[in-house]
Amino acid sequence: MLRPVFLIILMSACLSSAQPDFDQYFINKTLRVDYFHTGTFQNEYFSLDEMFMAGEWPGSRVNLIDTLNYGKYLFKVYDLATNQLIYSYGYSTIFGEYQTTLDAKNGIHATMHESVRCPFPKKPVQITISVRNSRNIFEEKFSTTIDPNSRFVNREKKQFPYKINKFINNGPSANKVDIVILGDGYTHDEIYKFHQDVERYTKDLFTTKPFDSRRKDFNIWTIDVESRDSGIDEPRKDIWRNTVLNTHFNSLDSPRYVLTTDNKTLRDIAGMVPYDQIYILVNSNRYGGGGIYNWMSTSFTGQQPDKVEWWSDYVFVHEFGHAFGGLADEYYTSNTSYDEFYPPGVDPWEPNITCLLDPEHPKWESMLTPGIQIPTPWEKSTYDSLGTILRSYVRDTPEYIATEVKMRQVMDESKWKNKIGCFEGAGYSSTGIYRPTTDCRMFSKRVIDFCPVCQQSIDKVIDFIIE
Image 1 (cartoon, rainbow, N blue to C red):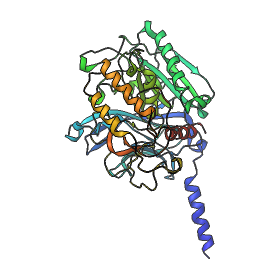
Image 2: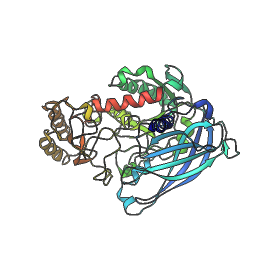
Image 3: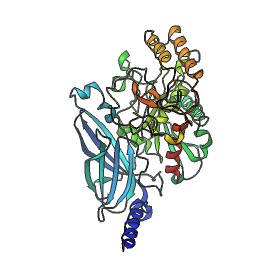
Image 4: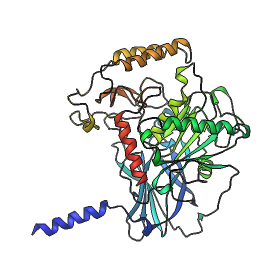
């Protein structure tokens, strides 16, 4: 008597986990929804701006429902007639990071312009945006309906005088990860440098594990964005430059954090090609960059080979780890503008750090080195004492560089090198947050591979997109 009921429940579970049929609900175009995101630490509001029909849909035609569970926000699309979920993906934003700053906690409102995208629906849909609450559970904060055939969907074909190049072409976008690389702060006479920079940094990416074995899964597009001035804004030095994408140092009042809040310009220009990821190379010798999951990556392109901390090769790949792999920073000795970026008692959503709320079953339990102690002891006191000395020196001085080299030696000579455990110190916090290995591209400021846990996350994202 129970078997038919069990079969019905089982069939319902299978149906609910099945991916929607792309051709039933969508056409091969992109719906871009722009909105304003406003608020403080405690409050946030979403206001619809514009909707656009954009170019070819770059993502998977098979994996339409996000199963990765990464990002602070979750965008969902429902078929309005049946209320069936037909598309979703997780992402993070600059506003989400702003909420962790002291300004936000002091009640100072900020407004950011943001976008979400999905395949262009054939029929009316309901879209929602949910936000992780203090327990890391998604709560719906915004909802609206969209008729794709209405006059409110802008179908203008935007034109820009910038040259497009498919730098790496491995096949149709539907089965590849498409990265669009744009330059900011490159004048007309410096576009040759932009091309050299693209060649150099994509080479860095595809010589780093696991990207070295996944090159065939990527397309790289470039757009020759020409700015009036060379370089980008440096507010703390009162240096202001006229550039197309309006990137700048001192994002969220962090000196070396490089982002742009000119989202509409960025999305309009990037939309000249199909893209899954946006990367902005900034024409600056000053160390800096940024990476936000499913939002954007930025990296400086200068290089001073005599100064080991000026390795833009490291920055380019590290920031892509954030934006593409959903990876957290594993370092904890640098100053940031964040205040409790990871609240105590809640395990972060990022796959490479943990609060170790259940020491018997760590987040990466299946990858642990057999028999390793949890938490895993390491040479933390030595490393931390050097970190204290480092902060007493002025950056770029010989004393600073020498101390940083000593900190790297601690990692290289560690008895725990290449072992997977739970090492305390990660996510901007010296205590209470743990990383999988002593060293990783997300921990040390140098050209090394991602650790196995980070590599696994990157592989998962690639596999999800290319199917």
